[in-house]
Length: 354
Image: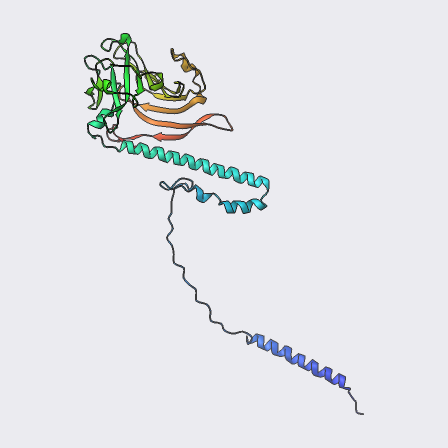
């Protein structure tokens, strides 16, 4: 008996056979990796190594005289883009963070400027001729046979003094009266020829020199409250035993001192200078006619503290605490800068560095 297959069944078998062959060929080709080309790999370019500077200083401090704070803060474009999507509290935190960076950078710049100025003064040569010697004035100098009545300093290039220091004695007698105070006046806008007439170069026991006079001040015209630079007040029971009690400085337009520096001798031996404390006296009424005003100088008004070491007449600065700021959290007045003086290890006299 002959079976008859329709055309549809035959075509179905043909298609099925083709599919089997196709799948079989696909598996063989996959196993033989015939679908891929062996592509030559790209040459890897070698990036030259750029040497990086390794530093140990704070990134917030300035590298020499260059400030790095702008590099730490976002640009105006970045700030504008971030503020579009950042929540309000995130923006507030960012503002506080940027404020801290700016504040610390300002402090670092101030310390750098202060340190540089101080080093320039220390490294200045000792011998610079008569013009430099003219500018020196020493209240502790040898008063000579008659006693010094005034000194001149701060000479300009034309040889004109810019400051006169008038010595006030008990009984207005430099020979027998003890030294009461030294008042410094600004004479840059006055005629100074009367003062220069009796002035001569005076040498001290330590070899320094200054321009002073053993005669009374010839004229007091222009020497008034409006031209006062500072007042150095002395204490001591007898002549020759005087020492600085306090200094008034920083006079304003109303001829009122804005600062007072207290000299303290009582912390160690009572004879040598132990420390000086400078207070801000603005917006406070003080009576300087007696020493009771010192009781009104509270800790929150202190702006500078200098600590000394050494015997009497040989004191030298050990360190200085400066830039006092009252804290927001604890309300305490604390220094934000310290300057330490390093002296010669061998002799202990010469100043090595600050």
